[in-house]
Each structure stands twice: as C-alpha cells, then as structure tokens.
Length: 221
Image 1 (cartoon, one colour):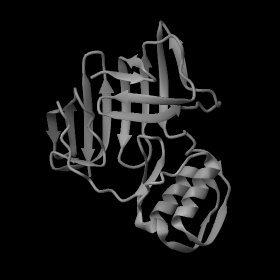
Image 2 (cartoon, one colour):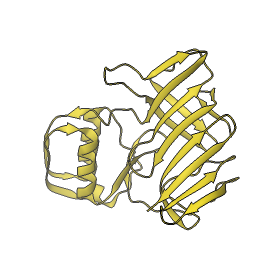
Image 3 (cartoon, one colour):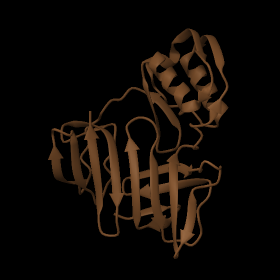
C-alpha cells in the first residue's frame, strides 16, 4: 500500500478525490526538502499530477519539521481559483469557449474531452468575471455536462458513465445505507470515483493513509 510523492515515500496522507471538480491532498513525506511546483502523487493503481497548493499570501503550502515534510496539493495546474475577466462569445462552439476560459487562468483542456455539448454552437454566452472554476461550472451547465481533473492534470469536460469496478485487495468494513457511504480497507489498488462499486455510483472517495493502514470512505449518489 505504498504511496509516494515524486518518488519520495509518503507515510501519512489524506486525499479527497471527487467525481467532479478537482482533487486535493494533505500529506507527509520522508524528506527534509519541501517539494515545489508540479508534483506526481502515486498510490497503488493510480497516479495523480498536480501542484503544491498556494496559501493566501501566495507562498507554497509546504514545510519541513523534524525530518518530515508536510505539504498540501491540488490537482491540475492549481489555477482554477484564478480570477479571469468577463468575456462574451457569440456563435462559438462549447470547446472553444472552454479552451479560452482555461487558457485565461493557466489550465489546459483535456483533448479527449467528450461532452456532446462541446460541438454545440452557443448563440450567446457571457461570463461577467470571477474565478475560472465558477465560469467552468456555468459553462458545464449550459453544455449539459460535468467537469473534472484527469489523473494527468488536465480539465476534462464529459458525461459521467460509472463503469463497474472491483479494486484488488479491497474489503468493505462498513456500509451505511442511511448515510450513503462505504468504509473500505485498501491494500493493492485505489478505489476510484466515477465508478460503480458494490452496486453504488461513487461520487467521492476520501482516502486516509497511516503508517499501518489505508482506508477509504466512499460516498454514493
């Protein structure tokens, strides 16, 4: 159940991995040098590309104490919260609008984005300024699709398909129908959102890694 950040072992971590939007993580590494910029978080069966998150003052949220580094990560280029100016599009395909919004913030659209609305011509679509993520939400609603950060760190616009999954070594510890959640012990492979597990469509997976265990709390729609 080994995890690593840029090849450095990770003994403790919390990873929030939703079906839509972006993933975030807070973790410790066995290193006396804080990472910077683009990173790769690797866990069994899954590799996520992201960046060291920024604090409100613009500095990177990473530090070393007692021979261990604590760092906060976010998926993609970490620019979805960036403020972009208002824009108006006329008779523009959805894909062009998405590319323009993401480029303004510093993110990249996944070329494999397959939302049917991306080819639709928008007669008039306007955004009055604010965060890129808010603009992306508005555009996704107009196109009738969802968006998420791919493991490669790109923004994907598409329709959720919920393929069935059965991670190797996974063991259900608790199932709460009233709370729509499963607590799962993991060892050999990560449990993924945007999949169907134990008959449920998994909308988010919260991973908790300790030096002895790897647990995931999966919630379904």
